[in-house]
Image (cartoon, rainbow, N blue to C red):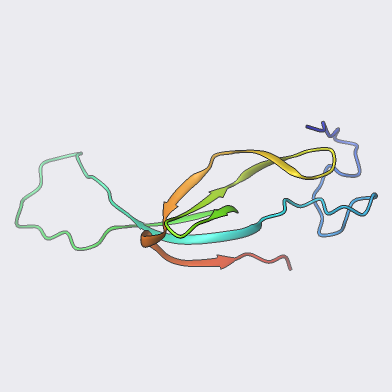
Length: 109
C-alpha cells in the first residue's frame, strides 16, 4: 500500500482524478443502508405484559463491495494501492438482504 505523507498532493481525496489520470476513489458505490435487526435488553427484569412490537432500526454507511441476492456487504475503510485499486478493507458489515429497508447511493456535491 502506498504511504501518503501529509505534504502529498494525494493526501486528500477529491472528486478529480490523480495526476496520472486514474480515479483516486475506491471503485465501489458509497451507500447508506437502513436495516432492521434483532436485539436483546437484558439490563433488567421485564414484565411479560409489556408489549415489544418493533425491531432495532440500524443505519450503516460504507462502500458496497458485495451486492448479493442474500446479503449486502459494505466496508467503511478501504486501502488503495499505488494504482488506486482497492486491495484490502476493514470493518465490514454483512447485512441480510431480507433485513434491508432501503439503500441509497451517496453522491458528492
